[in-house]
Image (cartoon, rainbow, N blue to C red; front, side):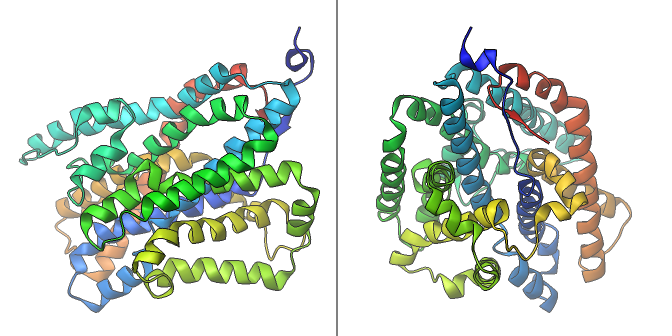
Amino acid sequence: MSTATAQKKPQIFFPNLDGLRFFSFFVVFLFHSNKTIFSNLKGTQWYDLTNGLFQNGNLGVNFFFVLSGFLITYLLIKEKEFAGDINVGKFYVRRILRIWPLFYACIFLGFVVFPQIKIAMGGQPDEVANIWYYVLLANNFDFMHSWPVVPDALILSVLWSVAVEEQFYLSWPVLVRFIKLRLLPVLMVGIIIGTLIFRSFYTNNDEHDYGVRYFHTFAVIGDMAWGGLLAYGAVFSKRFMQFWEALPKRVIAGIYVMAFAILFFKKDILPPIPVVLVFERLIIAIVFGAIIMEQNYSKHSLFKMQSLKRISKLGVYTYGLYCLHFVGIIAAGVVFDKLHLDRRSPGISFAEMLLALALSLAISIASYHWFESWFLKWKDKFAVIVKGK
């Protein structure tokens, strides 16, 4: 009997991360609301306000990438320490059970259900997305090639980041398994440098280069490598951990000021000039990584996300919220059209956004409990390390 099976499975849980997940989703939701619901206010001061507040909400995806790199690397290292090896097959099964059911359900909704609904409502489908890219988990490249034209079924438009994460999950456990742990930081630094070099070839301020910088795996994988570096330091470096544990309140406050400044004033802080376009993603990853480390380990935090119990509870549904929130946004628009409400009114637009959020929450909670949980109940059977409480 192996050491891993002879012992009780260890538990790992970071109680402050669920709340961070929800806030990351929420800023993405506001970004997409600005592009859809609040676009009805274009030409007004209200749109100038919403656009100023929400135009950088897509940075929530950056946070998700850094967080994924941190969590997956941390768990893989701990598995290797505990079991003496990494069971790559079980890792793949766990990822499949968590990601694939909802991912492929969204593909079905986008390519099969949505066109039929659009026809029934008197519209004509005009889909630019290629289903085979989606089926093969390479849809970020399809999105990149069609950019700035987005899929007709908007539910498909958010799945590019899921594809990037799946590509990361495909390769990362193999690399961590076969590379000596002491050499892992060299690999991660190499990935970050490779990302910077790749981005340096696409620094024009045009749609093509933007599409490559934002959607190409090689242009964004550095986020996950940075998260992985933080995880490595958390496991192996006592001095690194002492730094985060002793972080003074004024430094912590500075981290959050930088994060909010980037979120609301990104173009002023990181102007779109070539050298900044190369490094901006790494700079943002460093700030977001600092928030993850501060929340997990600092003893002098201004607050801990776990204290926001309802927000943290909603973090459990973040994957569904991210994948399905366009269903809520579209449904809210249909409801307001059927009620013959003036969607060009600021008050009506904000009410529409609130309804879209409520519908997104309801749909994602239903998806989690009535669909995703059926697959999730099998995850622990393939786990070496399980989620604690």
